[in-house]
Length: 365
Ligand code: NAD
Ligand code: IPM
Ligand code: MN
Image (cartoon, rainbow, N blue to C red; front, side):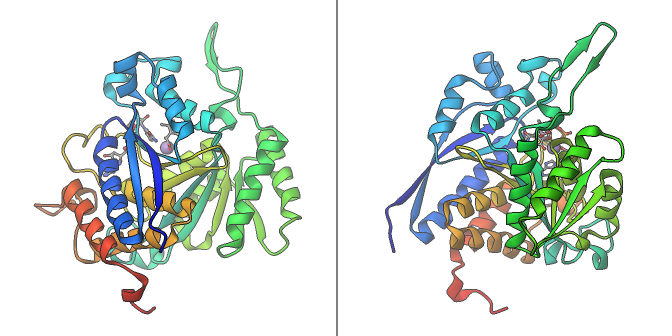
């Protein structure tokens, strides 16, 4: 095997639980790297509130340059109560938007699965959620997050939801192409019964679909889609949607497996890929070693998928399942346990199981 593969990762721990969970992701990356013949070098840079405190800006030019020169960016989360009074481009969250824009990562992929071992952690009945396997394809660098004008007016404020044909077209292609690797079903979610911008969304997605006759397409209004995700999540394969709707629906879907601490994301389509948990800085549990690192660890698996290190990525996913199956639970998944696993204990269990896993000793399905 080629043992010269090495990857440079820009590590942006950020705020709150961000450093805690990404540290475990790096631990697991290192463990599977040794087992699969590659090395990962992570260099730390500031973003969000941590960057604001240190440099006066939530996305310093030095961080931007380092990210653009890296092979991939692994991010924790940004924001927190201590920066709640910041406004405009001093908000920690605006640093994250600036990072996504600088990398040009317009396609945010958010897979949602309900691991067998966790059907009992779901607030829904196991029979309803077991086997859920869907992929949100969320547009990430347009829509109301980036539309102009935005700001205060004389007697109010406004934000603008805006999409160009090209922006809709390119994200629609991503959804149909991803669907081809899955169950070939795309559900496009919009609010075309009310919003002009959603009318265009539906029109363009329908046109792009002509190029993918082997994939089925249906359209749902976002309010109905939210209800359907809870009522019968197994009906979905790929869910294609805009920036704001995708943000809301993916947090909603995190309730299916039972915790926001489980959902990873990959943001692609630009110069360098960005990998981050769906969750935020979780100020309510930060600094306690209580956060679930699964979302960050699975984001690292998506990072390896992008590098073509799929065996190592699969080993990580197996490591998560094995840690859960052997009874490891962080507090979010075991509210009644007196001594839940800490972030580090859970991370170490995953690293161990992931490093031990090779396709040779994989259970036959
Ligand atoms: P949040 O995602 O930080 O937390 C929501 C709830 O989920 C909390 O109860 C939290 O304890 C729980 N949770 C989140 N991650 C968890 C984990 N890994 N393990 C266990 N439980 C976890 O959302 P919020 O409280 O609305 O926002 C807090 C801050 O994070 C805000 O400043 C917000 O802007 C920011 N935020 C950042 C990102 C990001 O950086 N990508 C994403 C969302 C929110
Ligand atoms: C997310 C977050 C971000 C978003 C915020 C912090 C800018 O909620 O990654 O889901 O809305 O995209
Ligand atoms: Mn969000």
